[in-house]
Image: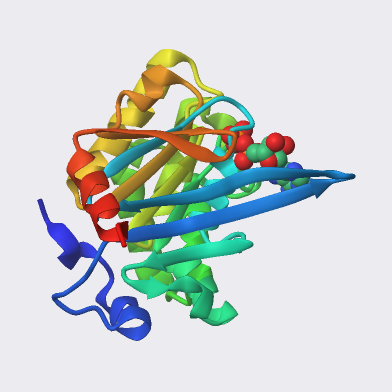
Length: 262
Ligand code: ADP
Ligand code: MG
């Protein structure tokens, strides 16, 4: 277990001033996100409080429409909550500037979606290099890091292939390599196996397990119970609320509720 030392220390000190007293990676308190549709208010995420420790592999599960993607978008700083708090490594993200939020999204959060959304006219290697271009990394280091990421997802033999020359599972591996190329602290995956057959989906889940072993924190959103079972902990949503939080990490849930007790 390599631990927090694998996180990029530059950003950590820049944004968070990480010290030895680092708290939970993620901590939300009373998080709410509502949408209005005509006269109706949809409480997509409603009063959601939980924390995730560094190195956890958590599944956020629940039926379609239960608020999983909305919660993931909040955790990924893609959307802002209407109310409630969200602290990343003890730092309230609402207080961060838009620039800092963008830096965190680029370097500290890796996103994986149901469909890999690769650039069709770029090789696997070039697709994985993209976040490094946004991060201003020079070409030789970009190449090296992108190759390394593709090796980690088992695609070292396919680096020069175009997306259409790859299977669905291989394309999703490229997307995962792209998500981890900056060595993010947090990997957020929304239904990452939703378009794959069960064998290929299992391979992708094994890859997330492997990533967890290198110190990454993984959150996989899924409506499929068998996928959720692969994670150490399952947080279940229903109508935007947490209705269950089970698994090996129950002790963290306990810590959280203990801390929230007035
Ligand atoms: P899940 O990912 O669990 O299927 P979502 O988070 O996508 O659930 O959606 C939760 C609820 O919020 C649903 O009722 C959905 O229709 C609604 N919703 C999600 N995004 C929007 C949006 N941008 N505008 C209006 N309603 C939305
Ligand atoms: Mg969804």
